[in-house]
Image 1 (spheres, rainbow, N blue to C red):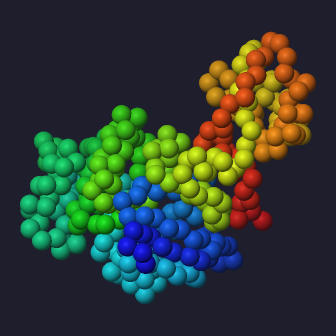
Image 2 (cartoon, rainbow, N blue to C red):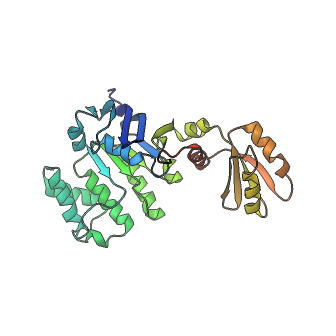
Image 3 (cartoon, one colour):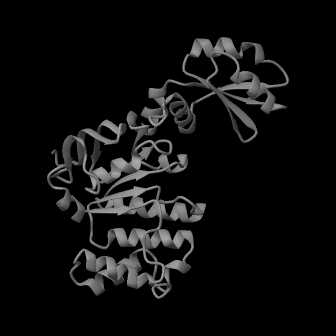
Length: 308
């Protein structure tokens, strides 16, 4: 594996019964990179993370994670990876310090007491270390979970929707911390549904029902979708959106605040479709497609692999 790649896998596949939930995925993540993993619920994101860190065995595929073989050396990978699950998974009847000490024991961390104290201070938990985990708000639970993931000094963090249910201020603080850690050489693979968080990542991949559809920087992902988008302002936008959605050539008519975003991946067909609607009292302006426009487009184009 090249020294600059923390993850370098190909053909990663996982099946449950007759359903393929991760289908022939190839992915490369650079050391020190914040890599965003997007996709609708049930698309295979969590399964893929668990395959990478050795919690699930791949049915097919090969490659390396942190230089270790993803199939044969999963136990070694676990020692160097921190995994933050979607749900808070620590002991609510233990204090912050007791939770961190327990995790440090599991990883046989040397100088455990010092490591726990440094983790408390680094994540801004000082003064709360005696508070029971069950009494913490979402943002403070998030800090505890991140501190626990870091206690054994991993080289890669796999974060599965880490800010779900957390207020905007706590989310911003969390992402500031992530960028600091990435600057120190830690690598992140993060699943998220928040477009503002996706835009904070260095690169992105979009997975839908087990298939990797696109990857790259935000600009590259948007360019790959090849959407043409118009913004529309004026009265009675709900009715206008309903009429537009019935018109061939229009693939999206989505409300964004006080305007509509109207999009399609065939520019000529879209121009023809909207021509009858481009008149007073509505104002039309062509705009740059955004990541959310691309996300919705990819989601609507995808086929549910559990649908029968």
